Length: 163
Image 1 (cartoon, rainbow, N blue to C red):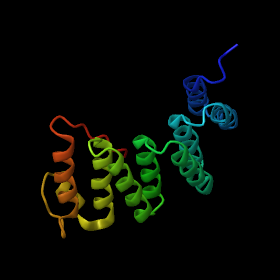
Image 2 (tube, one colour):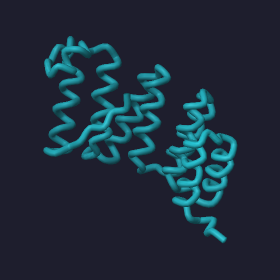
Image 3 (spheres, one colour):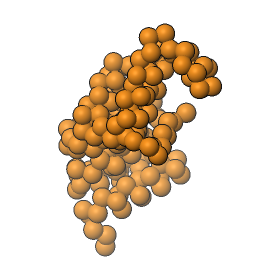
Image 4 (cartoon, rainbow, N blue to C red):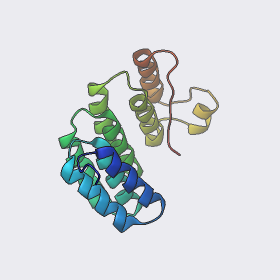
């Protein structure tokens, strides 16, 4: 018998079912995992992310919110929630979550990547010029954020931004 409090087992099995397209099974597994391991941020991320991909926006938002209440210092969960809000066209919510994540860990590269992406998506920059290495931001917000992030994170930072 498996240990019901082994969060990684619930998470792995749930993600496996998501990848197989068995969403009802995945939901049940992830919810069971959360009943036993409410402080495991990756369970909240997996379930909220699945609900978002299925178009259950209100449920995804609720799961991200409750997850962040339970896992108050988990930057990855905050960054995922921010990316969700940005995809949903809620730039102010996304920026607020990224700022909160920055307050938790200003050296986390994903936070800065998210902040730069938020500035670019807010149309403060000419995306083509930025992609080509230029600095064609009308108000320079994205460039300021990027420079601040590079100073905070240091050399060798890796920026993974989802497409």
